[in-house]
Image (cartoon, rainbow, N blue to C red; front, side):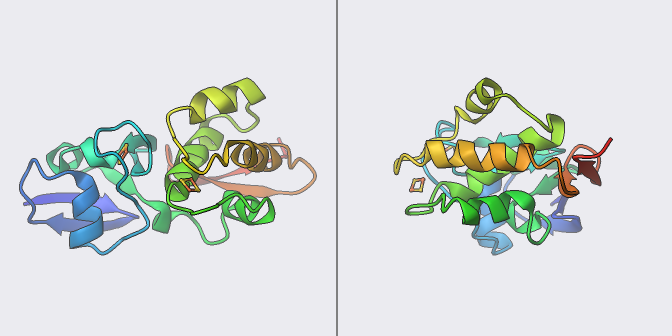
Length: 168
Ligand code: FES
Ligand code: FES
């Protein structure tokens, strides 16, 4: 029996210790936003946050996350700025990779509010998109990162706090 926080709620899993976290999230707790792509930690479709850092849940035994804080795409705040930007830029094509992309991007902005283009490309480079939406992903991230004329709340997975970007 393994306990951990899933999107802020304490849960108990009866899964075998070596079961990948992805299947616990999807099959035991019904959160289908996190996707299975390669299964070998190479594509990023299954990205979730572990104590605030992006991890590949397809390759992470659930035993590793005992007592940890796991957040999935369903656990992002409603109307997260990145989700709004994704819609405005019409980022998704088939959509399959996109929850992983947003989880990776939200971890980036939580630790680096205004990343350079090179920093965005480097940070996002492990998240693959077979529909080649990379330029729109980058534009959407840049859009959120440069919104300095309005208060933008970004979920900060490191601290479970909301951080204000755009004002000092
Ligand atoms: S499904 Fe996990 S990295 Fe591809
Ligand atoms: S939108 Fe289709 S794989 Fe990325």
